[in-house]
Image 1 (spheres, rainbow, N blue to C red):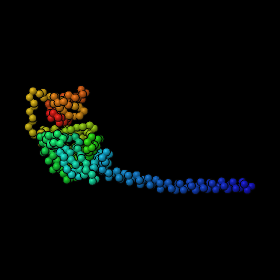
Image 2 (image 1 turned 60 degrees about the horizontal axis):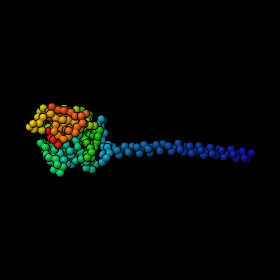
Image 3 (image 1 turned 120 degrees about the vertical axis):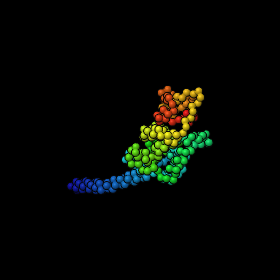
Image 4 (image 1 turned 180 degrees about the horizontal axis):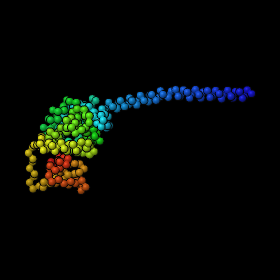
Length: 271
């Protein structure tokens, strides 16, 4: 009789212990979930304020349909390339979709092109020492480690054509005739608008489009060869034109036709 009573008491004791542990676990669960929620929120806030790392992706100041990061322009390399301060770090920014004439870089073997100095001075006057807002496309850095960006003079809200004309500096370079269209996949968000802006500048003779056209070389054909992959066009006798594969080869009747299609001139043969 005692053995049966002792066994029953022991079973009841085990059940009480199990019930106590179960209740303790349920009571502690909300605290664990709350902690996880706080951790997640902290990480999101950190990402929202984080500038792009050397190899990472920019993650800041998100607007509907647009992603921008505020920066301060500290120096100007040429018309389409600037240095900015991002969270205390120097970053070199190459503007997407445009190509200004080159300024002289003897160390790189680059000679100054017509209107190159004017383009650099224009960019310096408009941007140097000022805040800008950088918008990124699909590819956020090039092979040289430069940030690839659309540079906004004011924070964008809609990205409409009217706003692009008024607030985006890439567009201003084209509309005022300081740059030509340079379309490189996969960063083509505003490519169609840029071609339109360039056409307007050409028709009005703005900037570099008002320069006297260079006479074609004697005895050379006026037809140009384009590379559909790189969006670069060449003189027919250029060494790089000879290397274009048949599937990427595009022919243009003249230079204007190539520019109208969004191709940029080769820096070797300078068509």
